[in-house]
Amino acid sequence: MTEATDTTAREREAIAAVDLARHPGRPRALQVIARILTDFTELRGDRLFGDDRAVVGGTARLGTRWLMVIGQEKGSDALTRAVHNFGMPHPEGYRKAQRLMRLAERFSLPVVCLIDTPAAHAGVGAEERGQAWAISASLSLMLGLRVPIVSAVLSEGGSGGALALGVADRVLAFENAVYTVAPPETCAAILYRDAAQRARAAAAMRPGVDTAHDLGLVDELIPEPEPGAHAHPELVVAALRGALARHLDELCRMTPDELLASRARRHRLAAG
Amino acid sequence: MSARPTPLRGPGPQLRPVAPPGTVACPACARRVVAARWEETLGVCPACDHHARVPAATRAAQLADPGTLESVHTAVDDRDPLRFDDGVPYPERILAARAETGATEAVVTARGEVAGVPAVIMSMEFGFLGGSLGSVAGELFARACELAVAERRALLGVCVSGGARMQEGIVSLAQMARCTTGTSMLAAARLPYVAVLADPCFGGVTASFATQADVILAEPRARIGFAGGRVIEQAAHSKLPDGFQTAEFLLAHGMVDAVMPRHELRVGAGRVLRALTGAS
Image (cartoon, rainbow over all chains, first blue to last red; front, side):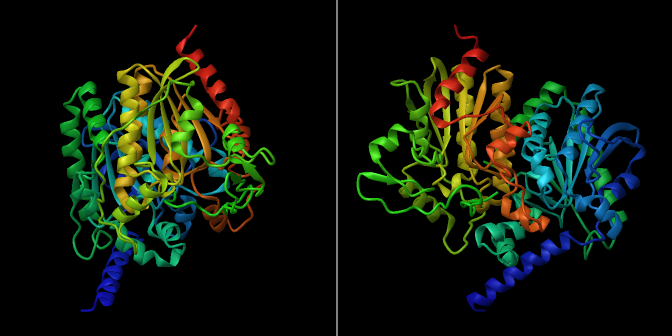
């Protein structure tokens, strides 16, 4: 095989993995909540500006354990995708998440975050209302939150927009998900000045969660049956339920001080 | 979010006009300024008030009280977690940036006093791969915070960056959390952190330590934001409002405490540091 075709094959494989992660049939946050949690009470609004439907959350139960669940919701058909802005939060989405995290802390509820976003929304309103400020405040809040936090990457975790739900004690991911610094289109626009070279960017960036897992940034990959989670959503969601319960059991045995110390160590290391 | 300077909207072209020896040409209006004068104005054009980029080490010297600056050298091994190659292998890009700027990385650390307040001065080198946040820069930022905590110093941070370093992929994203461990330590130790946002400040840097400061100052007309204007314009299919993502725009939206000309920064940052530390 020549070097050129080898490169092409690698790029094709890389972008196919990204497209698989974006399959519209993959389980979304609200579906995960509906399937594995009970007694869900959705809590809405950031109390500052509005209610961002790209982020959903509220109190719920996993088995007997009450918790706070916060997820990025991409929507699962044309209408809901528009309603939820394709899972791309505005600042008010992050501020709603912060509000729910503070509430969880006050009542000692562990927090489960479901990451599912290509990136934070890029727009005039988002910038006017401080998208960067909202994300950086989430990072600070999560690092100091005195209750356990488990995050799970469902399909796409892109940019600081994903990390704003990812400063956790444990990070899980479905094995065909991607977790990246930016979507391959954006990377291509930055590196090659051409968003169309997304396959080339994907090959170079290794966006699959296996990369993050190898580097220690993701703790556990939730296996997906062939050809992917979209074919058997109930199976992968059940597996996620088991993993969440196991990690929460472990973390809930730790004192808040132990949690904070180990969370700080983990993120200070940052795969370093 | 960019490892390279993004094309500019806003004030002036960023081409570097060629200037005769001993002079500097303003990158905005091309006016030739005698080098000594340029240094006196701290890299601000006397003709058009353009606040040009200055090297990180020069920044620190501009902000510290005379005679108090002491650079802090920390050895951190280079990393190439993805063995990234976009035509030029990433390690070669690092070496080239190092040779070009004389800085070891995008984050440069010094000790100094600011208006008599002991501080760690962190400044960013835009010439180093667009001031982008990679794992070494993240480590250096975290260590700057830890040094401040260990020696009970304030942090004065000058943020100039295109954002995350694409060549490090997911590792670059993790640096936002790593840097946050630093700013959280400062907050817990009740040590003040004043940030100066200069042109340009975007992406993962704005969305982490640049905006976690207790007080945020911005230079006039600096472009500051999360997503680049080009990305937003393409996504919105519409023209951006006048002055969008400038320091003045952010001041009007309540995102920064003050827009401060460069020649006032030392005194201005110093005054607020004195207030927050209760200096007599």
